[in-house]
Length: 177
Image (cartoon, one colour):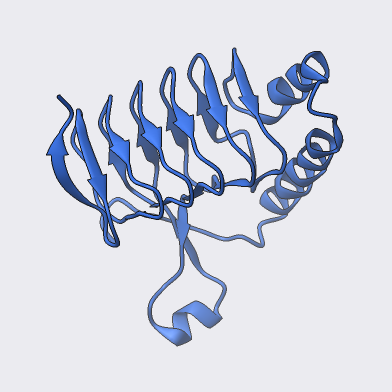
């Protein structure tokens, strides 16, 4: 697999890191919507980088430390980020509800898959992007700055900057005027 790194999900350090992230996500999701100040320390402990963000409940991730958030990030309800590979999200990025980021994948061969082997690749979302509700972004994808991903799209390959892209698989339909 091009640009993918093999990982062992049963490595004790990774198991401990996932447990830590799950506990922090539970703490975050238990807070009332108006508890903005209480969210900030959890964000700082959970994510690799964060300054100003607001994430609606419920939020789930694998590690958190591999998520790097730019300024003024917003995620609507039920966001899932599987951050086995690094996930870099630019400034002023908006996620609709149910956006899912999958930085990991498994072998296609069933015998290899049964071994527990996993692969990961980084995901990059540029500044000023809007990811519509229910969109899924797969491992190894880069979305260029200022682009819009339509609701329900499945992004399997790179998207250039300044475009609207939709569908499954996601394809560019027009430039942003």
